[in-house]
Length: 232
Image (cartoon, rainbow, N blue to C red; front, side, top):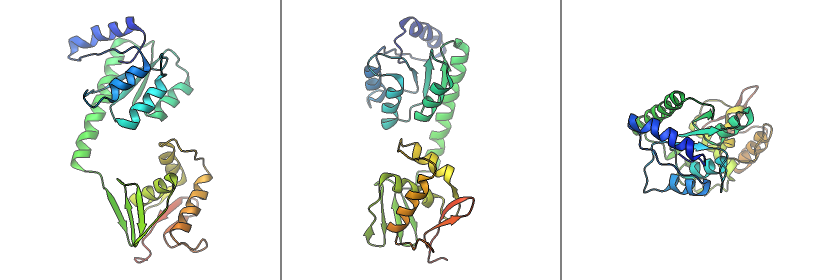
């Protein structure tokens, strides 16, 4: 639990510990981030306040998400919608204003732990694809690289994420909104119509004719679709 309210930390610990939770409290944002991402410590969940000394909760959350998928339940005295949206977009699994009851905290904590356990089982049963091949195009998700035949494609981070998203859905339409959401998850400066600009740049690097693209097709009023030109 990363929260500078020591009384609240003691209250939460005294409630959760008889229910088989081991609770460790840290009262500074920077130290909390260090503990949360320490590979020697295996946390099942993090309860994180927004208003913290050292680093605020959003910065702590960004740091956690760069290193870990541990479930994060955010607490804040500020219940305004903007804070809730920012927390969820940065990567919080749930969000609870500080006027919570301990029973609600427990219910939400158990819910994020259940979702994490379900996701872990699904990931084990369906290991992530490391490379996607569409015709002569190879997209390596681990190395974040792509090649067309023997030629490496010099893609920007946004272009790679767009190509990877389209490749995962090869043969199916991806809406602009879906592509935008996936790029936003990585905190790139991407907005609605800029998707079209990035797609145009991606087509050029794939050697597509702008008027008759072979790899990335525009589906009017729907979005974009990656196809294998040889199959066509």
